[in-house]
Length: 423
Ligand SMILES: [Zn+2]
Ligand SMILES: [Zn+2]
Image (tube, rainbow, N blue to C red):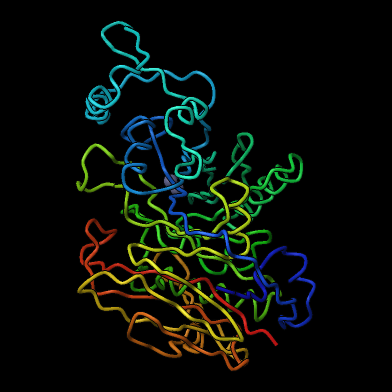
């Protein structure tokens, strides 16, 4: 299996230095013999912040459900040091499950009429759950900031140490400052790590205008399983899936910035009742094609764009060779698939119109952005770029109902990352 990728967004500086957004990056053949797909969730909460169960219950769920890696990303905290929790009210059920599943490993104390539990650190969880080559815990934090009364949340993936919210006057400035903080830590430590821009529409915080100009931002959540994140937009705001096209078109066509890759995550908070509403695990994840199950290998693969977000559709292969994007689906029996190849031409209409709504500004973009260039049925489909496109990406849509979806009626889908034509 040979595979070539052009212009994989490695290094903002390299792509930003290219004139006119033309893609002139060298084609880099990859030796892929040892690579395989790893399933992982990059966005998880526990009792360390506002999840409804302790970390062991969350980690066990993911390990039991075929995931190979998990990033626990609690709000403004990493799983370090001593923390005691007195579970009551909404956490009482979590305590019950905890006792059932892990009774003999708990560290408890009585404080007044409360039982308190000492939360396991990441190091302790690693000792309990990790298995070389089959299960890995990656350090993380959801840097949970706000600006202009809007939530600004980013995940720091594989951080070495906690990053406090960096603040900022506007959503865009605040987001950029937090990205810069992750990149500064990476530079200072030499450890591979990156930020993801999370759930843009949580609190209706972000627009494509905020996200497109971000520097050093390679990843954003195109799908997040939390019920409050408005993945599908509303009457005046485009779905996040289409926001991706606006962002890509602006970055590649006008701003001379590299592509941004899409991530799907659970943003899981609720393990006590599954399915049971709330932010359950299992709604969206990523598949990463990496050599090894290590943070370094996963980060490297993701920075090459060698991963895809999914809510249930599994792919055998994604290949981009000779300007042809080929997607091979690992089909489930009895399920039909259609694949949309979506792209924006270089000469797209750059007009943006704005108008005021009750509490926000409405942005309207040309239909030449994010066009469905072809739609194909079957389990192995291809699209050949003719060079007039800024990028093409694929969205694979099944007719299988998601068993525990973000929204009622959702079917399982997957997305490829965007590919740019190589000359
Ligand atoms: Zn968040
Ligand atoms: Zn979150």
